[in-house]
Length: 97
Image (cartoon, rainbow, N blue to C red; front, side, top):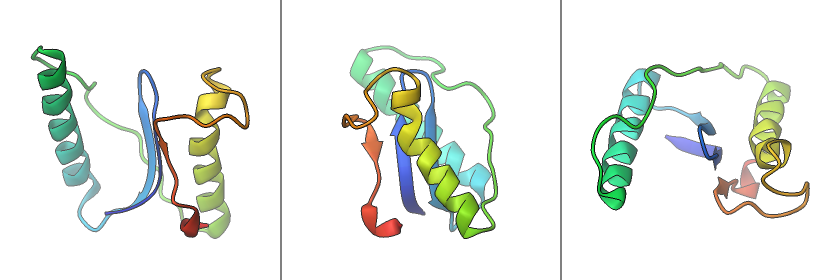
């Protein structure tokens, strides 16, 4: 997987990537690993993620740029930061633009 942008929000995650494996397999691995890790850190067990996911195919450069901008702006839209404040759970390698 090549990660282009990602944000972890209090109740959901967004990411833009190029998946080199079937998306269902990638998301199963992601959800399994993160649920086990988070449950371990919190000393709990049981389900963490809701079933399912929403995906979008990005077929043009414009669609890609809009998706990355959406991910980057998500914390400010949710009121977690100001428009130019850094958000600690955001990843965006600038070389991807």
